[in-house]
Length: 323
Image (tube, one colour):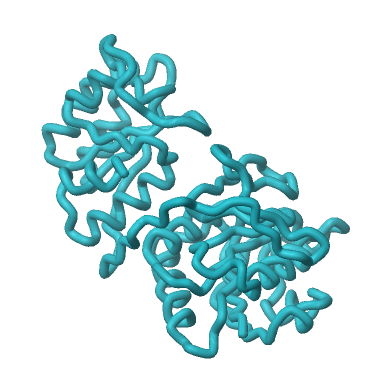
């Protein structure tokens, strides 16, 4: 039996003339009714968890969703869980579940890039494919997955790379794990290492992300630190480099005793101590910042929230992100 957990998002939306835009309108049961062939895939149980647009998801809501997924996975009669979600925040919720739950049973996130009032509504096909993935014995042990546009991704790798294309989700480094072709679930590769889950009572908040750009200074870093953020993730340039005017803000964060984590604003690759000029990655690392290496900014933020929630020290977070 597969649990279908509906949280809202574009898959549930229709155009509302009074709002002049798409808004949540369909229940999970209505979406299921529109999804032909679902009963042939598995017995399903529908839960109407929420009707939130992607940008309305908060850390508190994501954590509550994660806890509900874990409760369903603990039920012996449940073989897997499918979560429908707004695509704007889907990768964050999926990553949080993937980093904090260890289960052989698959959890599959899906959604839609077109609302139900559009001719090209992709919600039913994505939901059907996600159910196929969750029901497939080949999905066991592969962690939390994301299935949209007939492709299967690991929640630990996937990101949204287009604002509205049906194949908006990609795994930039190595590509999708597999695909659903003609209703057949096929995997082409697997993750070599599944990280140990981080299972705090709740994530620590707030943890900010600050992106740098050519000519950036330290104002945003200083504001984050002064406003009480428990940690900050820097979306730095290239290999982890920051402008000279930003570097002093990095130092002040280190001196505060709170973690400052360096990622890259680039879509692929890893940060590293390649450059030795003022503000270069080597100088940033030597100043005491923590490198997240291949983690993207949003992923590193969730790792830090979970790690701080478990009580990890800065040194332990450094070791965690170095893996």
